Image (cartoon, rainbow, N blue to C red):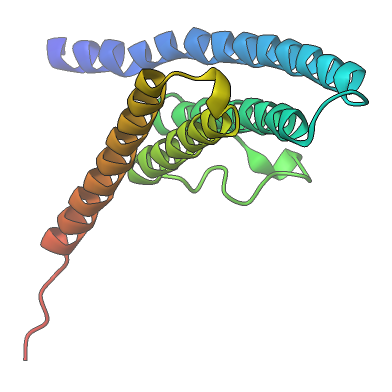
Length: 171
């Protein structure tokens, strides 16, 4: 009886994660405000901007969009993997990937999103190379390469894990 009570308590504690996902929705709204601010700034300065400044403005919007997408992936996949299933039948526009991402898929999507966001930061620095110090560029490239290396290592370990648990064919 003590064991069952403890297990029910531990299982119910997963709901403590729900407020974290609500806070991520609030963070997504703050990111939307920042994207709106960036869009207004981009549009106001577009007439007098150079090609490089336009590209930097677009990259800033792409960066914010990828970050917002990353937040959505974390919210839905995390909620479904760790808290509770979401009934998709009631939602006609339900994206196909939602509800089908396991923890491994979630990790890989997160890492690939982080690598993409990091790549945009590096690209923005290279587009603005006259205003960025060599030290900053080295750090940006180094950090980006660590993200790439970490992502590759994570993907390889997941691949090796899947291969290790596959049943072997008997000949």
